[in-house]
Image 1: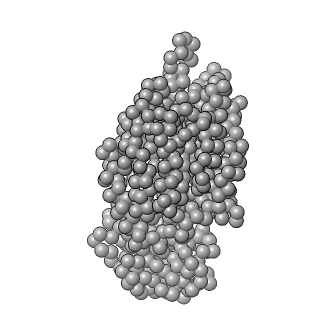
Image 2: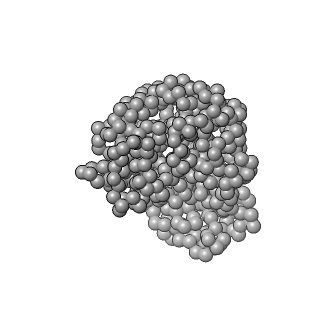
Image 3: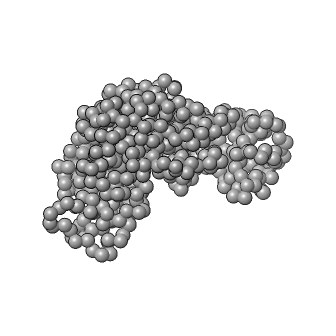
Length: 482
C-alpha cells in the first residue's frame, strides 16, 4: 500500500539504492534533503465502461463488501507491512525472517470462515508485497513460502479455503520489489529493472494458470506512475520531484498490456484494478480520507484497515462497530465497494478482538443486507448523514447520526419523474411511516426515533416503477432537518 508517500524524504529514497556504494555517491542539494515525497500520482489507468465491462464487474458490484488480508514476513516484527523500508533493513538481513516464518497451514481456512461470518462476499490475499516474499510456489522467485521454512503454498490453501466458504477469490500482487534498485532508477539500473519485470511476468503467469479460477487481481506498486518510487528523478544534474500528473517516460516499460492480455486469456472472467498501465475494471481509493464523491459510472472500491496498519501490529486499536457501519454505509450510498483489511499474526491467526468486531459487523449486515448487497447507489445524491441505495422498485434510505449523535427529524425527498412513492417502512421493526406527498411529487418524511443501540436507520421506500435507470446526478440533493 502507499502509506509512505507523505512521510519519506527524497534523501531516504536515494540512500536506499545508493547505500553501500564505495564512492561516487551523488551530492543532494540541501533544499531537496528535507523535501517530502509527493502524494499519490493523479495519473489513473483507463477503466473500461460499457455493457461488456458492466457484465464483467456485475458480481463484484453485487458483493459490495470484501476482506483484504495483508500477510507476510512483516508479521514477525509486527510493525506493519512497510517495516523493511521504514527501518531501512538490508534485504539480506530481512530475508532471514523467512527462516522463522512458519504459520499454521490451516490459517487461510480461519480467514475464510471469519470473512463469511462478517458478511463479506470476496477476499483478497497479498500473494506478494513490496518486500519480494511470495506466498506461493513461484517459478520466478525463489524467495517464497513453498521453498523456505514455511514449506507451504499459502495461496493454494487460501484459494481452496475461499471456495469452500462460497467466497469470490482475489489476489493482491506488487510488481514493485524493494530488492531491485532498478525500480528506483530504472534507467541507471536497467538490467535490474528488466529482471524485476521478468519476475513479475513469471509470477503472474503462475497465479493465472496454477490455481484454477481467480476472480480478481489487485495490483499495487506498479505502473509508470510509480516508477522512481512515486516521482524521484534526476535530470540535468538536479534531483527533483516528477510532477504528479506526469508518469515515467524513460527506457523501461512494464509491458503491462502483455501480462494483462495473458492473464485475461487464462482467466476470462477475472477483473483487475487500476494500478497497472493496462485498461482496468475498477478504480482503487485507498484509506478512509479518500472516500471521495458519488460515482455510479466508473466502478470503484475503498480499501481501509480494520485496525492499525495494513500488516500485523500487536494490540492495534480496532475500529468500533459504529465506525465500520458508517464507513460501509458511506461507501455503498456513493455506489462503491468496501474492502476491509485484517493483518494476521505471524502464526496466521486473526487477533480475537478483530474477529469479534467483524462478527458484529456480520450480524448487522445479516439484518440490513437487503439495503447493501445487490444494490446500486442512489437515486438520491448523498448528503452529510443521509444516502440511498436502490434495487428493483425499492429505494433504501440510509440515515446516520451526525457528530452530535442526532438523527434527522425530517427529510425532504425530491420527486422522481414518472414514479409515485407508495409506501415507507423502517427496516428491522417493519414499522410503516407516514409521509407527506407534495403536488410536484416530492415528499417529506419523518423517521421514527431510533433505539439506544441503533447504528443507523434504514428506510425502505417502495415506488410504483423500478428505480435502477434513474440518473442520480440529475436529481437535486435531499433536504435534511435536525
